[in-house]
Length: 175
Image 1: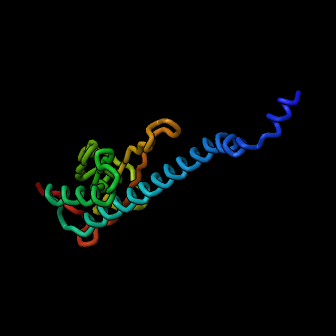
Image 2: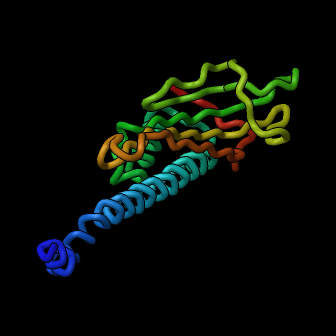
């Protein structure tokens, strides 16, 4: 009986034992805060990238392949230090037909399929009228956590921006 009293009275390993119980919880919290911070930062970067892309296109009268590729490169730099390989970009000009339908006038993409000219594209109501257009920039980013899918699985962060052209009613596409 006295040996059990000595074991329970001994306080030498109490701190180490408590640390062993608390450490996994603390490490999980730290991991969660880091992942949440990364996801929120990436979400802000995705929004900044699409706003910048739509704004740059909306300032032009016409776009060509070189200009579009430069905008995609700028989007890559905005998203840095996150890998642009996990991102897909689409920039489209959407017009309204005389029948009142919104459709893609032209579209370019990187890492994704571009919209098909003439295909219907939904935009918020009242944003475009007949003889007018709206520039639509879209980004989709496949976010993978630092430690992989151990505690949190990956997910997609996506956003879209709609801007009216500034200098002309319809930004045209040149080859």
